[in-house]
Amino acid sequence: MGFDIAFLYALKGYPTIAYDASGAVVQSFAARMENTIENLKKRKRISEAEAENIRKGLKVASNLDDMVALDLITEAVVEVEKTKRSVYEGLKGSGFTGIITTNTSSLPRKTLLAGESYYPEKFATTHFFNPVLYTQMVEVVKGDMAETHFGEILSFLTSLGRNPIETQDISGFVSNSVLMYYAIMALKLLENGARFEEVDGAARTLGLLPPFFSFDRWRPSILEDVTRVMFEKRGDEFLRSSSLLPVLAQKNPSFYLGQEPNAEIYGLVDVPSRALDESTIKMGLKASLYAGATRVAELGEDTVKVDFICVEGLKLPWPPLKEIDRIGTGEIVEEINRTNQMMADSRLRPPRILVDMVRKNQTFYKDGQANPWLSSYRERDKPHASH
Image (tube, rainbow, N blue to C red; front, side):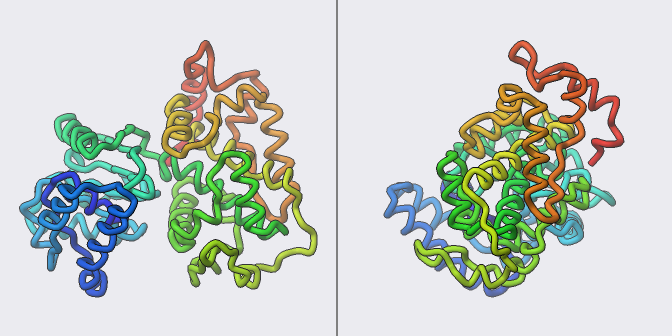
């Protein structure tokens, strides 16, 4: 995603310098840039002027010191907090005093700033959605960033044609809180007898993102890193319940070869002889979305914002928290429990706030707004919702 972010900055007319510690990546940079330009031209998604912006404005740095004079640096290295902090510390030590944003998928802002790795008043999280060049929403974590600098970030993102949405400093934000539950559920369905083309087909009939088709863009190794960090920061056991994910992460195989399913995938999992019918697959996919959305609301994110990001950013056909209110919290708890029971070692549990809502006869919305009860619940339960 780092390449795509740099490409986007240059495409919009900003002089941009890209740096990667890998020599092989640097050597392939020019060819990748031209290939991306040509692909966008074929799809009529880029003008000649924008192509010239990129060719003239996107350069490669030989080391981090070459970036000290920049106004803004966006970091997009691996999901390892020690590695990310070392980048900030290196830049700070070299004399960089501009704004740093991180495109982390799962690490909280406050974690990355531990040990005074950089100046908090000049540091924000800007989580671009994948694919960067085609999606407009960006989740932004401000924390204790200075108002002036935060305003500059919002203005910059808007100038890119992006829609910045401020979110809480929660591991996984809203988007990955929901998507990672969904991705792990897809793997659990596969481990329990579903074929991945059946799971993708069921998802399409529901109007949802086909998970295994998407795996070929996300890559299992990235999912492994993101779910590991989210588990460490949040304790969500379901995110580490797939025995297949670590195997896939080592090999990063494609689920589809062209348009055809890759049959070799089934050799990586001990699939039981029983199959899962379409209704069961659909129930599992929907239950994971309900659980993921509820969990991020439990951790402190605004109800309206969760639904907005799910619909406008993740393109879900319905806002999950409003849908829970429509169906009934009790029925959703039962649906999650039924999904958990149908699969071996699932560990999908109804978030505690959802169970308490059933007991207290509460909903996510009241009079069209977020239910005030949710705020009092989180305030009372702060140690449980810490991250």
